[in-house]
Length: 550
Image 1 (tube, rainbow, N blue to C red):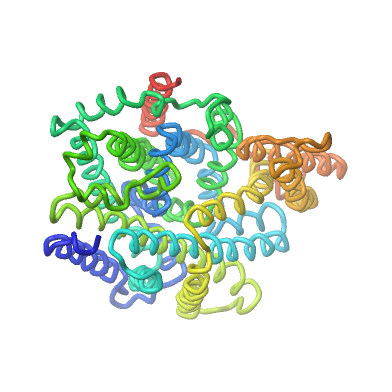
Image 2: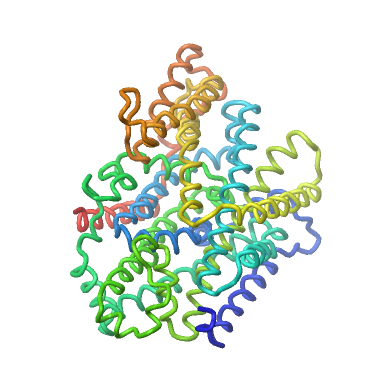
């Protein structure tokens, strides 16, 4: 598809790249007479306004796996995959109301730091090392791989060059400027991301309706494949194991979302950098509303592509170009790149910039958070407790560069895109229930002990593996069960919390644990603006589910 790019496409994309680098380096500059310190580098001087926080949350979250993977899932499954986005909006509201007040009151730099204040330094170190490994070998490597694969599919750029190019682009401003550069450029990234996504959605729906417009296109798509607009799948659906009916609303998806949005350093870090708790909570609400519209720009185009390739009249209208890389159910992830080739000159550059924005912003966020955990929880804890501000910031930059080099080496080794995506889901899905249990009981049950947290974290792995074995062909045995992966996560969380409760009660420390967190009604009091925004978002999501239940 390289030949389909024209001058204006290259011009738009180059302008985007120059804008991002220019803004990133501008906000990274040291103010006259002021040496950048740890708070400046890792928490953007605690100066972020609500709209920058909300935009940065979404930019850090949306990457190639959403644009490519979720569009492919829209092609193969339909709107049901949007539950990952709409349930995330609900989760963000919970995080803003119940988690952020405690995190900000404790003045955290990192999520492992909470573990130290609530449990012990040893447990904090174990989890810090785990998260650094997770971010480098799973998150950074997979985003580089999926992103470079997308560039190879759309532009014909060889994978090695794609990996190096994306890495250098993200490093060019994020390593020097820290969270300030990441967050402020994320505002621009989100504009490109949403604009490019909406352009692709409009194009797809307009093509389906033979030029009658977006609303006629939506009606045409709905009439052609009403089964693709079912939100709650029944057991007869071949995708039930991935999206297990009501389990999506009341089961393990809550585990994935609460872990990701509440206790994931590269997500939560920008909320810790707010001017105030109220500003951070407003940013959370803004992100929740952005989450509601994400399926429109990543899932709907996939459904429209499915209708297009299965309608001979539409394929005839599109001409010979439509025959290039036609997506199929077995290769659904071709849907989004296939749609991009129909965009006119200039707009194709905008859509490509949107994809690049999604990839680069996620990379920059992960790099910054990896370096924050290493510097604050490992370096300053064990290597140099009295490091100066200059030394601390330099270590942050060097550790981010080191993480990026390792991830670049790992990225091409991940295999095919489906395996890479499964690699992310299954690896994090095995450990996230245990970590979530440690945090939830630590936050909201004062009797939880350090020994219980360690026991729960360790016990969660064999519990998760027990369910995994049942899913992998041992379900005929009376000792194993075969249940969907999301349900496995839900049961693993509940059983792990049970283990932690038993260990805590056996120690009989009562309510007097000095590390227990005192809670009151005032702790979770939110502003009228937050409450109104939260109710509005919840009503919109409830209406969506009511309309497309089955």
